[in-house]
Length: 294
Length: 294
Image 1 (cartoon, one colour):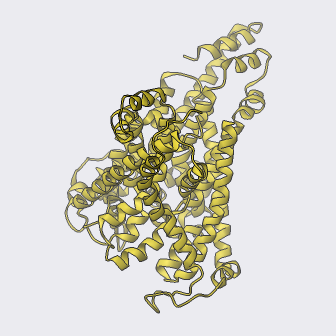
Image 2 (image 1 turned 180 degrees about the vertical axis):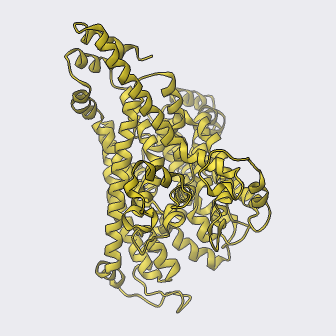
Image 3 (image 1 turned 90 degrees about the vertical axis):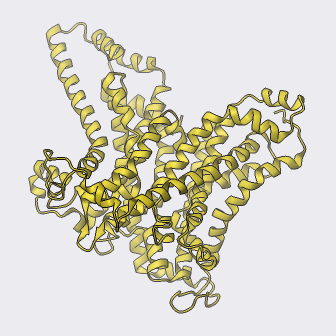
């Protein structure tokens, strides 16, 4: 690679403003949370930290049954949200694969749900699931009368399920667009050859489409996992963590620990733990991306 | 419409009786069309429902009827106190534009350096910048809450702009790097030989060439800042910094959310991002995965 050769200092000068902002807005908060994690600091007791407590806050996290419950909830949420958005996204992509007027129109609309503010997604689903005037509630109960007595957001599992669905609604169409982009780069002659060999549609999907899409499915799954673990806004606008604590995901628990219970040390320790987990998943993602390019 | 597929079908089934084929095909096509309409419904229904509710009177909002007399009363109400969405809308505009205005120039410079020069640690730095994208917002906001409280900067637009940059800048650097990578180096070399300084070259040669990429990136950054919820929820108190997404929360009265008002605010939240996402549609998927899925 032939490099341009201006004075070496200049390139650092051009890079510097961005680096300063990144250090201030990302690096500083991470390090601060890390430091907080080793302090005892109940904000209602004192305006400043009360002293170094070693790993106490971290140990507390592992022993806290509340936190264990939250980790379980987050895991279940992530599984539902990721599998549903990849599954539905794949289904939509298969349906819209052929070119046609209707498909072009639908594809144009596929980006809209994602552009809706997550906070608004939460409110919208809460509205549509209302047991007395929710349109989604009415429609589902019309088709499945045996669900008549379910009050969706008062039920621990259904509340978590619909919380995930509010995210799936935004992501599945977009995942479909990613799959469609990947399918577009596969030569149609592969499909034609298989069809001439007498393969039926189902066999075609299992033995040809799915293996060809595997790398994209992997990337999308990792990306969706990362974003599921970041989800927060809908918990506030849709369930408030309830019923009980059944929809409290890790982010919400950290928020409550820090801003409701004012226990900054514990919140810092939990945040640091979360950052470590996210870093591991993110590095797998980066490695997968690099692997694809090579 | 589905020319290649139809032809293959015909070749495959040529030996069979003609009438059976067309009936089977006909049923399949109808089924496919129905499923496609279902996809369209899945994608658009929640959005349409919010738009309709925004124009419903308070009695119509609590029925699932599609027939109602449209009214602008909800918009009149949300403009007046206590909702006062006017200032909130203005704050959202100022904060989003400022975030874009700071992030894009810095990102152009940084992405240029990352794209054109390899230096010690440049790869790790780039990966680090990508990773900061995956840090949950809760982790970012806690330290900033403390910092802004100490600086007396709570409830200011500057605070929200600063925190927004934590996501916006790293994201913009990655997205723009892809655009700069695609530029041929020869033009820059020629400009340098002609005696341009490096900054002049950036301004007069590189910047105009990546303007389409910068506009797309600006679109994404704007949508992100516009839809942001958690930072504003924690850092703003009054109409001097409150954003439109917090305006959604304000419709939560003592007896629950007032849905027709929420929908009216929701409509205002959606309109700008829909317009933007249509203009940057072509790059949407690529932008989302930071170039990972093409």
